[in-house]
Image (cartoon, rainbow, N blue to C red; front, side, top):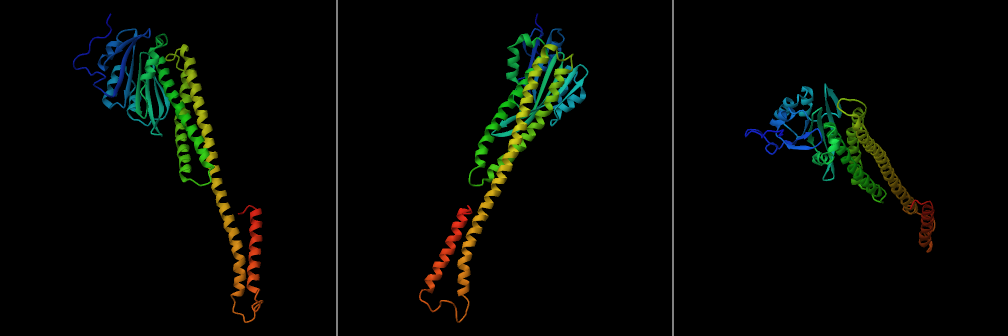
Length: 340
């Protein structure tokens, strides 16, 4: 039996709408029916053993209103999905869930942040991406390669999306760790580098923002593990628990790197202070050596008629020898004290 009627000439396909990344129908046995248009969603849902997975990227208000009409989404959830910059959270609206998850992506060695809004119902999953985020096509393919799990419904697709988001955080954390190791080597060079301090500060800022995005995700996934029995079947709770473990690892790694960054910044400042002290010690040592000839020459620069040794031919060489001996003694003493 053909579950989907061919779209009418006026129907909009996903190719005609760049904001619609994917709109795919599935049977309850996990098998893929195929791509559909937004206008045929109601026809697919009219069949008892089907569900729909829709992926959107920065949709406009009209498109969100269309989805609200098709799936009966809550007004507050639609408003949040239209307005980006929402905090990570999970809200329950009757028999549906609305999740906001922060995403991160390295773009030209710079960390950019985005967010994904997720609508989960008994027979649909809608993902709405804003800002820096990767396509969930790999997560969709992984789910389709396990039809026996996708037969559990849209909640398994939700697991695939969340697992994909968290797994993409691990390379970011790894890159931060590798860069921190390189910066630690730059800290202990002899010359002060302002760029090293600036990069340490930028990393600390990025890690703080990343932690603010990751830490609340633990609570969201914890709720999926423990609550919402109508939406999350018992067979999937272990899978969401695995995602929780990954989030916990990422959060712990971020906290550890933040502490290491704080230590690196403090060490760098301490080394700069020590370097300045070493310079001041050297300047003070050279000033002490210069004070000796200054003292002797100041004596002989006075306009006295009778001064010691003025009439002796050996006087001038003797004074030079005394000055050299005193300066040499001071130099050896400072060298032994490691001031020079």
